[in-house]
Image 1 (cartoon, rainbow, N blue to C red):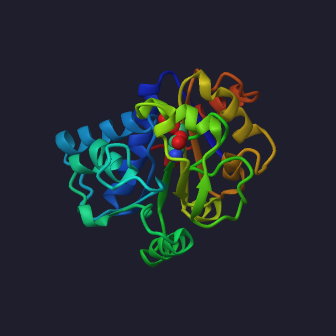
Image 2: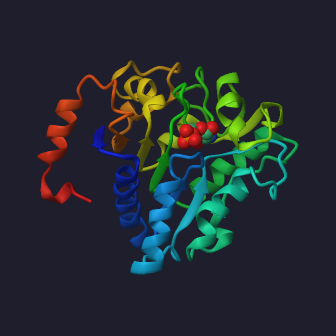
Length: 258
Ligand code: GLP
């Protein structure tokens, strides 16, 4: 794992956008994430599109997850969220922005067909990830199989609490979701996880320095051949090897710089 510590959340976004822009220029298949963490990265990519001519016209995108039962046009569906926050503002074809279908009555079939669609597209080149305060990625809550496919999950009460800020009340947060599994996510060729703020410090420590375990689903990054974790100082607070990560970052060979 490559762990990059940046002073602020804005610096995390700048670095992440630089990496994603490299893939966009190649017409890559992008794995997109919702949540508040990647919003600043999306804003930077939108700026690069408008001011520097960065094009996504050759890209395809697959979203990590979706609430079950929310109509697509609901403001908080991830189908809408990713368009509002990112893809409506760039030149990617809307038909090339895919998300799990949380309205299909047969969730197992919906999960299977989503995994098949990802595979048929040639797979995800770079998967952007946030992390929940309890270590979840996508909506793979603690206890998720490390090899899981896209499937229905029940949200952890902590996640319902964390996401209540996007809804009128916690009671309005859907309890079930369709999420890419940890096996699905692991097939992406490059995993890029972002975390900012001290609320994420324990999860960042657990995912990077704790055991690989279903208890911390984000720890699957430790098993991945190409994983990059970018955190701000606050989220890096609990890292035990932070001095070494900074040293390795500062002494990177030039060909590894983005
Ligand atoms: C959400 C999403 C995740 C996201 C995480 C953290 O529930 N399903 O993809 O990474 O929780 O969200 P935030 O970035 O808002 O802290």
